[in-house]
Length: 275
Image (cartoon, rainbow, N blue to C red; front, side, top):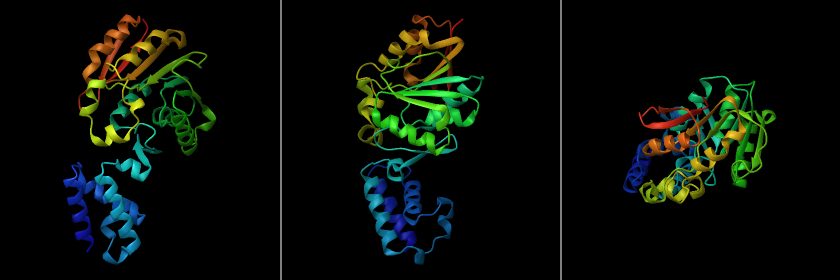
């Protein structure tokens, strides 16, 4: 019975165009049964009472509509920690962990996160470095509340300030490190995104509605006033636009610009420094 239930759910998800259908079915079964996914092999038919089965089938129905697994679970893992997420903030993604590695490659004391979203980047940096303090900004009030919640979960609330702001609008002071994963999908690329992203993640966090470079230009045009001498700026970028972001940074007066590839060997991170 259990095998048949999972097999039917997997078939339903595959027919709906879901990648990794079997994996998702197993994850959702673990949620329905309220156990860790590593314990799934221990489940027997007797474990699945009617309520659990019904909950599992409801989750599968929602996943078949391409609602992301993270939204169904209400959380997403990032850099070894679990972050609360919702459809109002961009899901933290594995490729963004490359930005964390780049940031941690050199010491810093004060960090600013432009477009904090779920808080995954800034909260992770604070959790990894107990001696630093951080400021995060987002134009979206929902994102600010979500990041406050994640800061509390990971016990960094005493070292973080979160401000609703349009980039630097309400920011004062200078920072050793400024990080940002701004909306970088060009308007013409939106239809190429998966249904999970295009239909269920906030458009404001995905695209500038133009060429995907608008916010890099805006940030680089003002960032000099907020960066300490010897400080760094680290952007996540669209791998197809690394040359364009490089040119934006060069025009803004950055003399040292490096590009870092993610684990899939795509140009994912740009690091800027003054010379």
